[in-house]
Length: 416
Image (cartoon, rainbow, N blue to C red):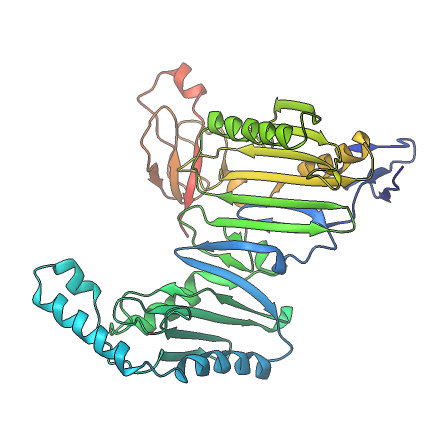
């Protein structure tokens, strides 16, 4: 048998014991992982920054790394810029690019003409921009193809977070117009108005989305969030994916069933499905499966449980992303109670961070709008919603009294 940890009553858990003392049992010691407008508890031995597979929006993918000081941060940025500056583009590559440029300029392809840029580059670095002491941008060719520069120039951002002892950077992202007069100002505006680093203080802004190491201050679409986590403490691997709506619930069900078929085949028909069922979490329709997979001498060196919960999300509702939560729980022998306790603690800890979720409510016709933004109601239709300012009367005067009673307004995009 495994030992679980007693914690105070306010901690959500699946297994309750000794109700006379008001204690519940947690299968793992938790830490909070915020994502989008939600949060979930995961084992506290997981390095969240190191577990990021992909977090980003608008083509930017964010990562965070430890750093000890401002001086070390600046050294990292300048060393990265020097790496590109020191790469001299060979004469053969320059000549090839020039020939391509001349051919395109002589063609009738206006789209290609607009895409090609003669930036006069002879080195891989185009520009290092220092916005202030804590924010930089590097514009350069791609590190994997430094000789191609007229069609493909890339930008990276660097953001120092001294309170957290880390810096945040983006992967190289395609930058189409580095020579535009306002290109530097666009970068400054992005850093000033769209992102701040994720911290206990910035998480209090419930209208901002948590996107890995940054908070997106003015979200207008579903960001892509993917964490791949390993917990030796709990003998568990976790994968969390949140993003744009790509599936229907029927497709979610089909994907889970296909995974169960693969597991059954890999285990030589020895796997045992504990359950396949519908499960709504935070009013999000979802489907849940869990299966036990015994050890074998062929390709399964450790017995494990695979559990999954997924929801398809809603395309035009930023409060309803597609979410897939998976866990691989490793055991030395079959222990259904232990596996269920781990899984239930994980799923039950999923919470809204507030903000928009509090504005999804039944409102009567004529009630004052509680939040400026785009609102949607099934009876009125339309994919973009209706723009209302805070205090405006909620529409629907043309509907009958019975229809008004069933109106369910959803805030799909806030406007500051």
